[in-house]
Length: 350
Image 1: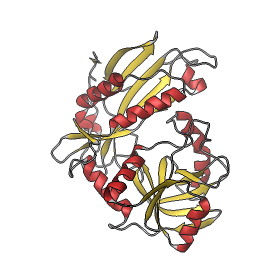
Image 2: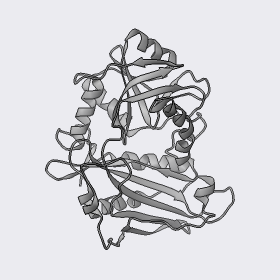
Image 3: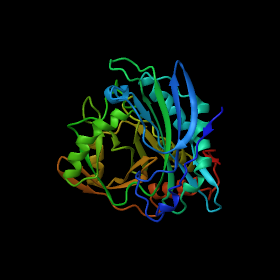
Image 4: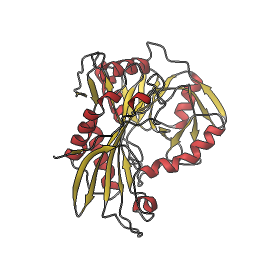
């Protein structure tokens, strides 16, 4: 695929303090863009990162046809760049696109565009613990027409952002029973932009009460836990790794899948099943629930230190080096940086 390259006349690289990288606020010099028009993908290009021009009637503004992905590339001690499971992100974007009635992004557009962008902005990949280059592919409707129907025009972009940890303090969550993230027949399994918009208000209410995030419960009964904020959710209960089974209302997280595969590889017992609020609360009271953590590309593996249920706070002991979540975090971090053997074939060396 012929990708045109337009380099920025002035790099911003020297302006960045790589010792202090807030998540998602600093962006690399370039972005990749391709457009869908006339039934085909055209004009794949790398160009300077900058503003987009669109009409006030652009479809995505009115009807929300937008999906995105998140992945990371890491710098090994040798300087080599390592990309973690990009094929899974590509497959998930395909699934999301089908649900939002959007034409599929071809693999060569997604992968070749990503590699061309990373090659040009390789110097933006930071080194050091907790640091990576976050990659955000996003795909949205651009038809400048008002009317409730699938767009005829689309834009696919990839941008990158050097970043540090997503969570920098203890993670306190509240079990949410008033609002729901998604229903079984909705768009919960798709990485649709609208899913996140609907989550903002209940999350804001939780933050005003002193918590970082919420634990979502199922829309039908509010009796089963589903996800935590923007992460999949996992517990260690009675020495077993327990996580809600996937369903149409839950996002199939790539970090979630990686942790489950790693646990099984280690021989650690795993259960993917319905997880009830009462079971979590009982486990917190009895001490049988010894770990709770979220998993996600941005958050990585984020230990939960406190869970609130109906006004009652339950503290969870801080994980130790021998805790499952810490072992998994340590191993996956080392794997992503090429410091341990990769028995799963997850890492792509650039």
